[in-house]
Length: 233
Image (cartoon, rainbow, N blue to C red):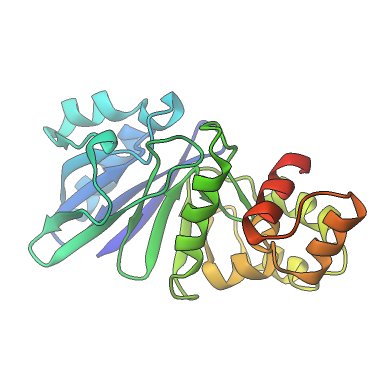
C-alpha cells in the first residue's frame, strides 16, 4: 500500500492511498490530478471518502465519483476500528478522532496516518466541536502509535506553526531540525518529530508547564494543560 499527496487550494492536502490495482481518495480536492495520477499508475480509484465534512475537504467528491464511478464512503457513518479494504489484504483502519469536528476521523495505514484537521505537522486543528476533552483523548490515542508513523495532514501550515512553536518554547533545539526535514513538495513528519516539536502534544514538557505557570493557567492534569494551551495559543 502506498500514499500520494496532492496539494490544492494553496494549503490543502489530499491523498490517494493505493495498491497495484485500486485506490481510495481521501479529501480529493484536486480530482483532475488524482485521476491523472491513477491513470499513469494504471490503477482504478474505487472509493472516495473524507476525514471530515468541511467543504474544503469534500469539494472534489462529486467530480471524482463522476470521473471514476467510485463508491462514496460517508465518514459520518464510520465506526472506530472499522477496516476499509482497498484490495484483499490491503486495508485502512478508521480511527474516530472527535475534536476539530465531532465526526473527524483519521485513517491508519501501514506505517502512516492520514490525519485531516485533527493533527497537523507541528500543530493541531481548531476545536470547532467545542469538546476539548474529546480532542485531548483523540490526540492521546494518536500519540500512543509507533514513533516512526508518518503523519500526512489536511493542510500545510508548517511555517506558521513552527513560528508559533518557537514562540512558546524558545529553547527547544528540535524546532530548527524539524524545519530542515520538511519539504513543501512532500509535507510529512513522524509522530516522534511531533512529540519533539508540536506544543499541543508537549503538555508534559517542563518548559510548557512553566509557560502555563507564568500565565497562571490551569495545569494540574494533562487534559488541563492541553486545554490551557488551546485557550491561550
